[in-house]
Image (tube, rainbow, N blue to C red):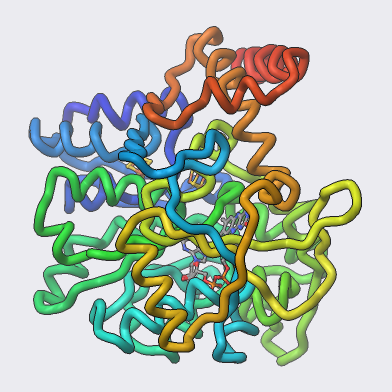
Length: 404
Ligand SMILES: Cc1cc2nc3c(=O)[nH]c(=O)nc-3n(C[C@H](O)[C@H](O)[C@H](O)COP(=O)(O)OP(=O)(O)OC[C@H]3O[C@@H](n4cnc5c(N)ncnc54)[C@H](O)[C@@H]3O)c2cc1C
Ligand code: SF4
Ligand code: SF4
């Protein structure tokens, strides 16, 4: 079997984001499998046709991403958008279950209730391992609420797309995924009109990166438990930010704060592609939600428990129209938001974006393949970084790449 040149390049650069687009584009020839230390990676079992190879090369976010602002305001750090506001679900159970204000899930509930779409393709907790994820099709508020909350573990929501679409030939879907998943799907839609019609709404969230399943096991170990004794595991939600919660087979629970679970453990297990991600803010989506943290006097986010608030970004005319409709129907409440405050409440996103160009140059100087980013304003973002910090990022990346 001839290995796919696209997948070979991705593997050589450790560029896989784990989205599953390649599996969807070559069904039966590529499958997503969990590989050490617990990331979803494509495994090829048959030679690809020329078309399959070309489609994967165009869509794979490990190989690149193309953004066209098309007249929208286009912030060098936050990408093109039409409106930005804060808000939350008006249904208290969705606001509580959501990772932040449940705005994302409430907008999904709005879409199915008002028949904008028939169903949603999204991620929820897997049965085995309980720390993992599975893709589900939800059709009502109960299913959407069940899937609310962020899961800091690998997900490949695109991998089963051909089967899902074939199994539900009369349904139109909204899709929720990480920014890289949505970028891949948008690129797939550029070459496939049917995909555009069948999945008219793309929703995402800000994303700092996906940790491996080993990261989740480290959280369980810190809670003095493990997979064998854990019946269910929730990374976040049920409050804002909510606690990482392991429910044991005996019914007892063990919890850890978001600050400790994400900040001290999971963030140390993030895959390489995320460290050189140009799109942690979902620029290809119609609607993107994020944490609208309050910040302290130094501008750093406060993680004190409180009723959740989501940042709601409409990036397209369709997105703006749907957010407005959800508001008019009383499903979300919103308040104005000043984009200038976003750098303070998303310091991780800001730093990665500013450092990215230096990191990419460093990676290339070390002889490693990098994603081809077009229209993502990397130069302008890098100009916001002090010269010495850019140099530090460049040299750090060369050193790490040569060691790997
Ligand atoms: C890996 C990861 C990293 C994140 N990094 C940031 C960040 O840097 N900054 C920030 O502000 N927010 C980040 N978030 C998003 C944040 O946690 C919230 O999702 C966001 O605030 C929206 O909250 P909500 O209450 O409106 O969403 P909810 O109503 O809770 O909806 C969340 C949606 O995300 C989907 N989902 C959950 N986990 C995954 C997953 N692993 N893959 C695909 N879909 C998933 C669910 O199916 C659900 O539809 C991250 C989320 C994830 C999963
Ligand atoms: S990033 Fe997505 S499309 Fe590219 S190799 Fe990984 S799973 Fe496949
Ligand atoms: S950081 Fe970027 S590459 Fe990593 S999972 Fe999030 S969107 Fe995908």
